[in-house]
Length: 573
Image 1 (cartoon, rainbow, N blue to C red):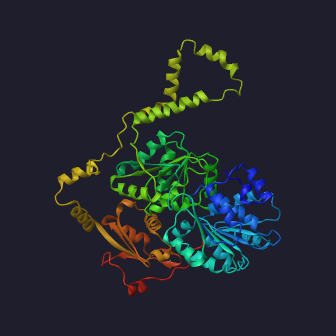
Image 2 (cartoon, rainbow, N blue to C red; image 1 turned 180 degrees about the horizontal axis):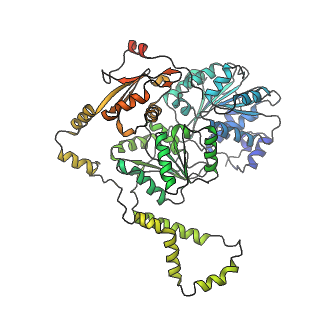
């Protein structure tokens, strides 16, 4: 078994590793650290979240910098403020026994004046989110001319969030760097392009298969009707009483609504989404990390960079539109060699997405039946009894009360005591689930729901004809002057239009995104509401235009793109 000593790390760093309880390197650490210690080799590391990537680049970085030089020598760029703070805190632990090494986290939502002041006092390692880093460069508050090492952490996430231009800008301004270290969970073409454009013969290491998921995750999916989605979620939470997990939704409206409904029903849950201030986000994350909250419900954008130990379950309330996002969602569990469960709640027409995901993460997804009401009650009952038996009674003067208790229960049998305890604890569960519906959607031999099959029998014409007719008659096509060049990908664009219009995803049909603009199908009853909510809004310092599209989903011409698109200024993050 390889040891950290064998990797070539110096004594002070090894001492910090020992203090943290690390005994042997993870596969990505074992393969990356010897390469990175040379300092002159461009590097691409592909590994899932939770595999120890921060130490893989953080330990050699601390060894390579010169503590006597008080200017930025290393730059770590990551997608979110949460990940920025997490990396900074990890570096503080790793440099515990190193003298004169200073780090600074720069990110949006915190005082830029304080960050500038700290930078001017002299730091060797800067950990930054792209938006705030660009702010500092433009204010001439940070000098990248002497930066030797640039680390791009969660590179695929940064590109998904629309930071491609920012990354290019940073790399073009670190002209004296000796190496780029790129870490990513997946390797889409955009990440490969960075490697091709800015790196020289990079050493590439893959832990596991490319774009694959963590082998310690059990991927499960439950099929139910769309209108039973919330009830299915609630039942799965009740069926797993020891759950400590994150629930993912597509929109912040869904996150807030589900959080409020579950809170009213007595669950320890809070929502994390883009409408929260940094102070509110920190408070929610603090409560979740301390396990004062059992559950956190979040959008993909809000949850990026979350690194919390011990998460047992990740629940996809809805599957993400971008299937690569699934890898990042599921990677919140089964960290540091532990096992975890990733649950997806789907309806019958989404089964094809499960097959796509299986191919992408190179894992088998298990179809599981939604538990019945009786099964939930049984699971809760025995969980409570296990806790009762395992309760520590060594502390406290309980013996003082035993004579009175014995007298109180002298005419009550043990069986009756157990029944009364069960009734006291589970009366509400038993009543709620007494006549609970079966939430499972049954599939016929062709994989279609029985509900759909009946519709097919009672309707005339083929399925494709009915689908076309419904879309043609029931939807209005809307044009909007926002597209991929504005930093959107499909999932974030969907979240934007739903959040701004306060509508549900069910009212949407086809979405066609182009570089400069997009077309959206909305059911006729809600088209006017969406136009009224979005048309005239400001996005990245320009006016958003939305109106009915006379030409439907026609591919825009180059001339049309020039007329409709106005370049967006950079949004400060």
